[in-house]
Image 1 (cartoon, helix red, strand yellow):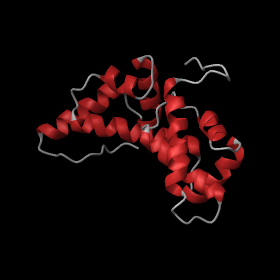
Image 2 (image 1 turned 90 degrees about the vertical axis):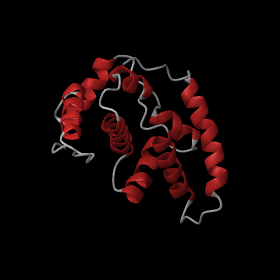
Image 3 (image 1 turned 30 degrees about the vertical axis):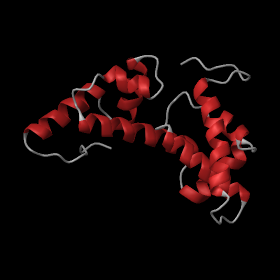
Length: 158
């Protein structure tokens, strides 16, 4: 996927920067040990709020939070026991699974587009790498479980 040049911000990134400002105001009321923890908590909230959208670049949000990616990453790991990138990917995957579990007949390109992918094939590669099966296989498995009356949300794959 093509990346924007360093100086260009997407509409989503501009919106995220606006949310950074809102979150900074909201987080001021919560006691945290340090301003860096506050920033890591804001990054967490932003990534969750955008469902891990691939077009939301961590570097851009880190800069908007006023710290380097490396510094923010250390605080994020200390607070959440995972990297920002792994959280970003996990949230994206969980969101896709939730949508497919709710409606296995959903257009796969609509999920891909909602998560920032320009092509369904890119999203399918990501999904297959993380789940060990394609989106179509996952949707088929969900339909099969639902036909059997099993409305659990998970497959046996990780």
